[in-house]
Image (cartoon, rainbow, N blue to C red; front, side, top):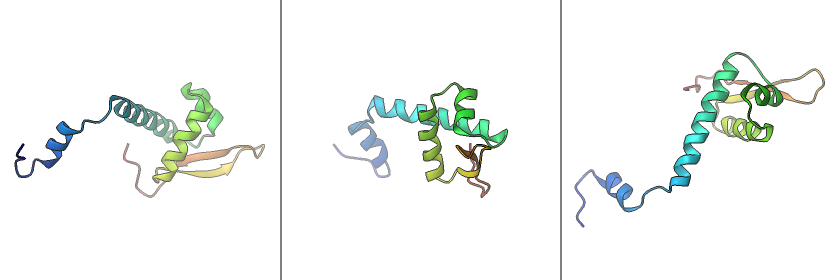
Length: 98
């Protein structure tokens, strides 16, 4: 099969489609990222506060926050009153594009 010039990505997409499970995971991550970022726009929050407000299990919130930290969207702030949980906030370096 001959590939048209400049059509390599289209050809590869047709030849090696992305698995449906991978696409669903990406959609879920993107949706959850948006929800978390919107919640953090209201102010700094801890994992339990985000979990309760968004009705998402705490371990899932933490996993998503760690991913957002890795890619520079959020950062930790101070500790709560009982020194148990970090507050998370949107990083103010201009990387918030949600």
